[in-house]
Amino acid sequence: MKERERVRQRLLADPGVVATIVAAVREQVPAYAALDDGRLHEVRAIAAWALDRLLHLWVTDGALTPADVRRFRGIAAARAADGRPMQAVLRAYRIAATVMTDEVAATTPPPGAADAFALARMALTTLDTLSEEMATAYTATSEDLTADRDRALRLLLDDLIAGRHASIGALTDRAARLGRQLPDPYCLLVAEPAEGDGTAVTQEAAAGLLAAFDGPGGDPTPPATVRGSRLVLLLPAEAGRVAPRALDERGLRGCAISGESLDRIAVAYRLAADALDAAPAHAHHPGRVLTDGDAQVLALLGGRPATTPEQIGRLILGPLVQPGRRHLMEALTTYLDTGSANAAARRLGLHPQSLRYRLRRIGDLTARDPRDPWQRLTLDIARTIAH
Image 1 (cartoon, one colour):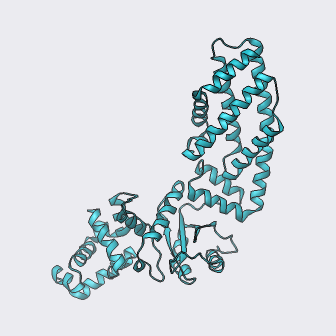
Image 2 (cartoon, rainbow, N blue to C red):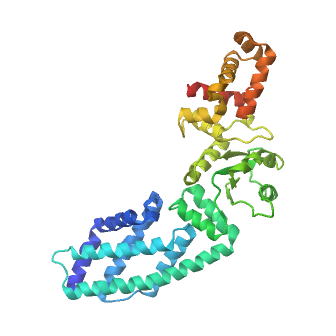
Image 3 (cartoon, helix red, strand yellow):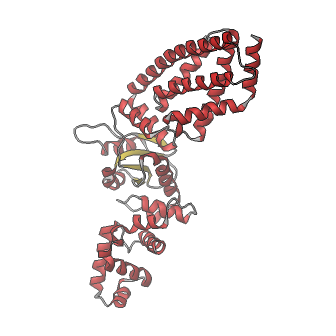
């Protein structure tokens, strides 16, 4: 027993052992490879605790206590809530146990045969117990979450917009257990009262907005959650087309982001929230929702560019950058430079009506009216930085 305690003290005093365990788990289990710093801190803490407990069981020839079992069950319940697959969690523990036995074997002098057999027996027995207990807790929690579908979907969206997820695959599986499929492509809509005074979206307005996006045949309402005074909805990309009217009818305004990938929903939420914080009042018009282009321009103006100038140009100008529409781009540039349709027409040698027709075509193609102050500003910024 003294030799085992010597090995235990040596391993617990070496922070490199926990680091080696975590590195091995991240290398061999994809669900752990993509964890952010906050989740990795939790993994390190669990690894350090588990290492201490397992080595103690080896030293004392003991077994998991009820307190140990409760903690492992709590860990499993947390993994069910955040969507990390149970197979990945159990594999992580098996890898951790393998690393621990390798570290014990590498000590000098190495443990004798009896101690080595005791270590192997303890590891196998403990892994068998915790596998059963954790699987039971994981299943029970998953069933509870599935039963409370609305709450589970809200938690899923909360994790998405906060970036708390191991992988999109895990979240897709989590959504599937709730009978849902994450929309891809998607539209993340962040809505708030049109006054923008910090008052929260009323329950009536929220219910009406959710109902507006019900699918045909009684399809379920989209995942939704609340962030401060704002309502956040995860919609199919095509639903973004009806968002302006749906918001306007309920006295709301909003920002809809649809150009980010599923693994960047947290980025999409931050863009939308920052855009609503920063947009001037005249950027909000009845029947219009701020989009990716508006959000990216506002991020650029705030000194927090989230993409390249070329991408901002594509988001705002859209089809105007195509070679066959050079005449429209020329009309827009001249209009922005001169400040009026008549002056732009004279410079281009066009009839004023021809110039106004081109401006209308620009509005149709970009969904931005060059005569509107805010939209003119976004067009001006886009054509400037795109070149």
